[in-house]
Image (cartoon, rainbow, N blue to C red; front, top):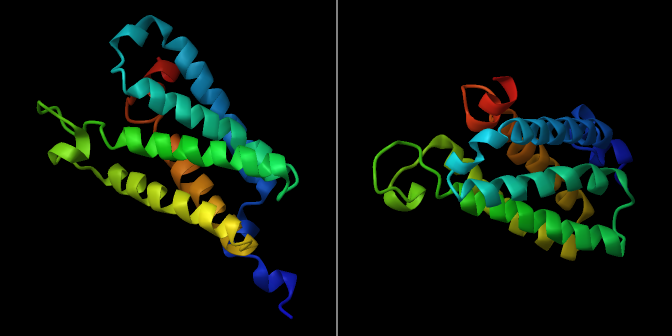
Length: 174
């Protein structure tokens, strides 16, 4: 029988559920403050940005709930589907974002590809794996996939929405 320590991944040892939940709360708060501060500029925001922001806010708000409440319950499963759907919506909308200023532009569908789009495709694959592993009752695989998605697609990607004069960073810091 494998010991509990051997079943614990490096990521879960480095980043506990409590740490990831706290980071998600801070990211959510920063995004809400930025959006509120940017209100005078909302009319200039491309329409596709709004469903992307909404999806990210939903996923980020649900992350602490999912990480800190009991796992495996009916409410966990229902909220998990909402979380995965929000992550999929965020990834799909991001595929249409411009990496350059050339026109017409449909993001990756017009050949306008950037490294961040790799994360979008990875998110789409991981979202499916998260659901499959949960349905198979593969708790360790499910938790590792969720943890990777929270760290990579939410927290790291979320952090990079603030520097380099990007929209949320501009709203938050100016």
